Length: 350
View 1 (cartoon, rainbow, N blue to C red):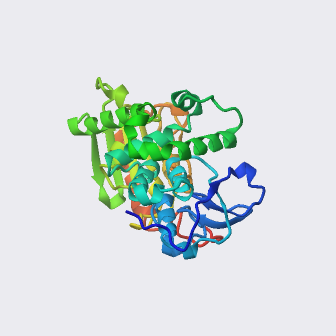
View 2: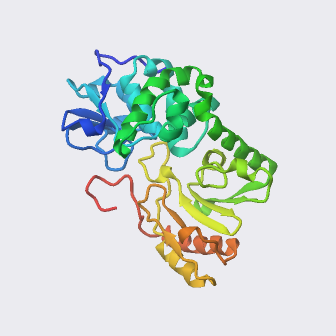
View 3: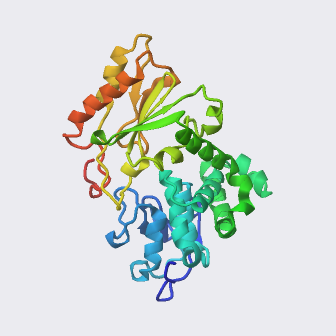
């Protein structure tokens, strides 16, 4: 259990970014802005004290609460500039009484599920799925018995964050109370985990390239149940099975190679192999396509950047050939400079 904050550190109050107007504040899980006096974030280049670094921003906040000497005095506001489970949980640890002392470590694991899709604890996964569901306000609001909010993205972020602070204590204490929020995602995760156990989805690792190759049989009767977020398997089933941070997914005639989020942030538990620019791979694959399909690479600095076909088209290339081309390029690219360095000092070129 996390230690109680020392030296009289008081709970902060959540203020949406649109209402800050330069007011002094602590920002979690994001980059500093006007009025930021403390950033508790694993984002690259953020000025979080190194003594507090952790894989997820919620872990940074938990460490900060145990080191109140590193927190600013006289600041009452906390904010987050986007919505996801890690940011919402980090905010909750700062703003909700008793949350850190009673559930801190479990919530850090829930943040890990939310950011990295790595499940170490079933209850933590359900908390992450429930908190993550709040971003779909049209679906979540009726489930919570409240009106669907109006407004732009930032106003909806504020709504989701406010609701997360309200439901977190009960959700983490008894996830069953909010089954309606997390059941759909949990079902997809469970179906995906079964797919890997039953063998109609399988993972091959190529450690020399930090690459996992995921093959999914889309003709299997349970294939539709395993899909999540546009992917043929729930990412948490894959990421909880392999530590490889480059994931090639082969599903029918569609292939993509995606960087996991862990290699974008300032990870502490290990140093990931740096990302490299796969633009040349995209160009070579495009030249090889027989049906005019075009390969694109989102960029090494994209949060979960991928090498994929444009416009969702199918490839005329054999998936094994695509993987071989990627691996051939990685042999050269990994020996050169990184395309993205989350550990670079602020202002240094990445």
